[in-house]
Length: 167
Image (cartoon, rainbow, N blue to C red; front, side, top):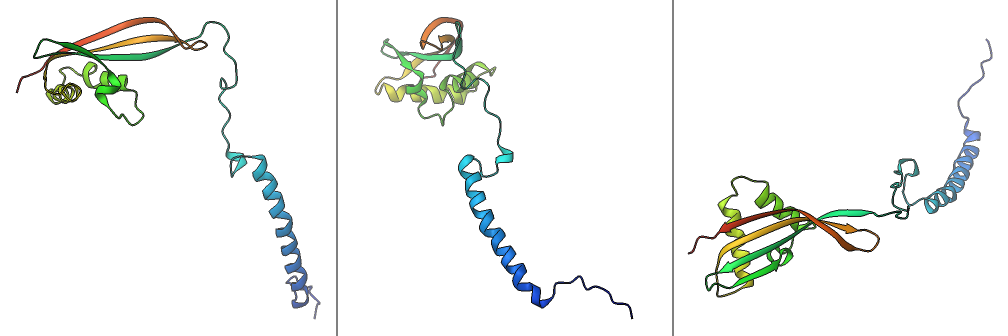
């Protein structure tokens, strides 16, 4: 009979294997803690690159375009009032109010009657006892100087006026 070497782990070797596994765990835990403290991501290989312009200071005249909007109304008694769009629209779930107004009143042709009725109802809430007869929505592109936060210019004014049906 030929003598073959048995490659299986013998019972007498098991305590050594258990000790090696225990030692590997003891070494791996501190290594994982070091990696975790060095990286804010749980999986450092999956981190995304930083934005290229986030840490770069502004150089030269840098302006940023933003939409600005206002809402004016004429009431049954002949008076007029201009409101901030945020007052009229109310809570917008983080969506810029000018975007809501642009989508509702400028990007649709014709504007749905329900949208005009909603706007009239919101304006009426701000001026109890006097219903609006006409409502004007103005949307303007404003350029803001990013270094000073001051308005540089206004352009591209879009204006739409709605006659509100009396009840």
